[in-house]
Image (cartoon, rainbow, N blue to C red; front, side):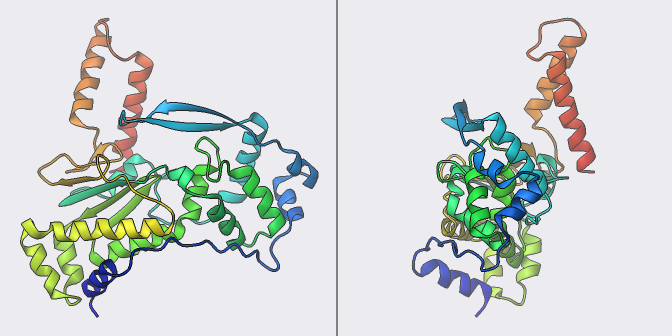
Length: 326
């Protein structure tokens, strides 16, 4: 059976089933005393850490709705930072996970998709909250922490049945827990000759149809007929969107299917994590023009919409883009 026959059969088959994480503790998992030793705390001190959060809402960047931020109390935040440094920092995430990873940024994420025929962006709903406690528990079991140690880690790193957005441990845990998800989506992309990255809740696929033709030659020549005619290339794109929805659902996620499902071709402005990727990674033209105008106003002591410090921040971002995407 060719790849596209398999894909068509899969998409036309029964609906996706959400996976149940394996919550069986390892028989000889690492003990609570080992956890305390690694964190340089006593067992009693670990149990004594108070778990409380201050919650507030901020407007989303899109302007549609608000995002809930949960900030841990100072003692808990310090403990989470210690867990991040001493336990989570050296664990392996998938290379396609670009957000919150050393050496990666919005610029390196965008650079992966420069010059594509089509860029597709999808946004996961309530990404941190939907990364549920049981999946975090299953992850700690999977890296061989015993039940008592895992109970403490879960208590210290989760809140209201998910990862709290605002905790130092949540970004890294979200990548660690989703290693298999990223592997499946990246494997799918490679099998059809596309590219995949994920920056937190922001999923991007890019398609270069010359690469796809080369990849699929010998697998299933029928699909090449769709790609030769660019008016039919949407077949590949929409099959990818459908497959992504199915895989995400298995892990408890859903995507925004309206305003945040974005499909852009070469003749349109293609953006990835807020940066233009049509020919090279760059700030949007409107932003660049605004920054030039602000710089001119500030140089001539005229009123400007940004302060000198804010302009310096934007210039630092431009420098990062230029140096990280050479």
